[in-house]
Amino acid sequence: MPADLPQGLITLQANWQAAREIRGSISSLVGFVDAVRKEIATSNYTPYMQPLTPTKGKGVELWLRKAGIEYAFEIKTVQVNANNGNSLNTQLMDWIVWRLAFDAQLDFRPKIVFPYSASQPYTVDAFWQAFGGRISPIRRNEDALVQEEFWDLVSESPILGTGW
Image 1 (cartoon, rainbow, N blue to C red):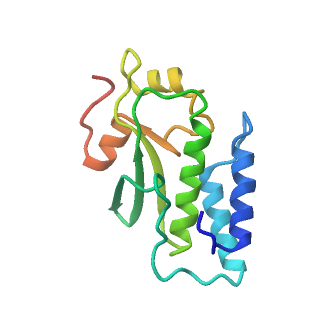
Image 2 (cartoon, helix red, strand yellow):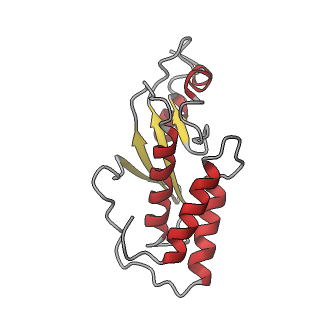
Image 3 (cartoon, helix red, strand yellow):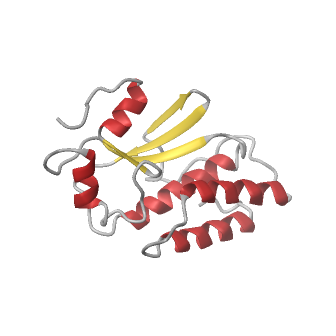
């Protein structure tokens, strides 16, 4: 996290992050985006003139602007480690703060991507059934895309169907 971010944004992120990491939490990234925008609007915050540069290892792997929406993707391996979700949650929240610090009105949607499902029968549902608990609090579609959820978004057409 850049040292010169306003304390209000740093505190807001810490509070939302802790709330999302409680098992069964209903805190969403959509709500976090709204809270960041509100914090920026109600503080004496001056937007950055250029986008912030993430620290090493926190950068975006694929950036896409489509239909007025800016997407940032982190592409992961499909063998998910236990309790990986908290670090992924932090990364998404960092990206939101960093990007909205530059342009608070931007429609920005960061996502974690798992390019295919490694769980038989190799469907999106099978991936979430096998690995959803390991990547909690990351949520299907809202925070992460698997297989055709991602490929259909970037290609604008269904290319994989319901399984391989």
